[in-house]
Image (cartoon, rainbow, N blue to C red):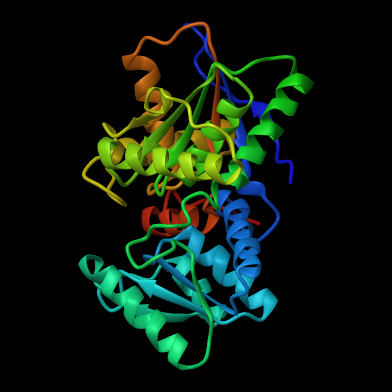
Length: 323
């Protein structure tokens, strides 16, 4: 599943070269990192002998869109616990697509997810089904290592592309929400003895909790591979929570300006929930830490429907044409 990796326009007065890896162009369900992760969950579901899938997210969730699409394609019943309901918030393009995919959406309060998972799993078992909840038990524990494999493999892809380009990256930046993508990149870096600094720009969690989740995911992955866990694992986890701007889905004019600028200058379709916030956070990090003379890679994790959500909300200057 090789995706393009190339250099983009970026101020180079500090000797910085910025590259982007376009996982938003993965050829399934409008692309994005959740394509790699979604298929990892699907393969594990099959290994576990389950016959239906339970997913969790909000109306903007790229992962839910991809998993719903996989299940629809494979003829597998899919059930989504959704923490934002449309009568309370505007529908997103992701939630509209979930309607096309015939995923059963069950509203759930964010502070009652565990109870919601327990109730839904119980219902499905009573109906004679063998459900697979992507996050493990009702507390969201037990399958942290599953999606790590997807980006441990993607890391190998990055190494091959480095050789083709004749460069070596010093930093890799990625949006970090659930932490699965950052965990996979970190696992790949550790397994190859790499010296790259993998930096997650948090879009949802504070650093302490997010770092624990990433450490647990990498640890479970290495354990499954029967590989030793580094004693200094936490020293390799770089999760920046200083660019949250109030939390998940929150953004301001700086993010809007970043999204507009990157589309104009580099034709990158970013979104304010994940990639736009992370790209802006990366820019701030490089400036605040006086990073110089380095090759930097930004992993574009996608979410094309969210870019169009933003475009619809923002509008823009109309073009008056006379034919």
